[in-house]
Length: 187
Image: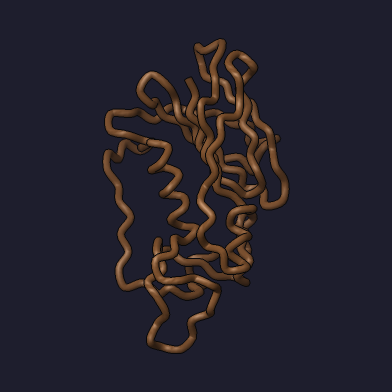
């Protein structure tokens, strides 16, 4: 949306449901994975392959993958619905290089995506909206390391969590668990 693209889709066909080395950067500073260097772009596990070589990690046919959880957060939060506009976001690259941020209008409210790329530490960040002196985080959606790590024991059913974290006029802050994607609905 920042580049003016009005429509995008995720399309994958004929992909393997196995450890895919080419989707994972083992040297990436923000990469985190318990699978020993693998990843996948598929959204739903379709079942075991007929060919040997699939690593069994507890997925059952129909299970949603971590890749799909990102889409789930965007879908459930409504970021972004038709007619909304991306907003310019300023972050402190020097003191918070682990933070990625995006924002958009959401009717008469705003939605903000804050991504904590720090795999080990939670962070609390202030949320400020130009021209606004007060506000309230109405709802927060989070999917992070704590949720993902449960997949290591075969529990792929852990969805993003939702909460209503702040009271009106108390200051806007986002609490970002380690290695997490967070969407905030702000009035």
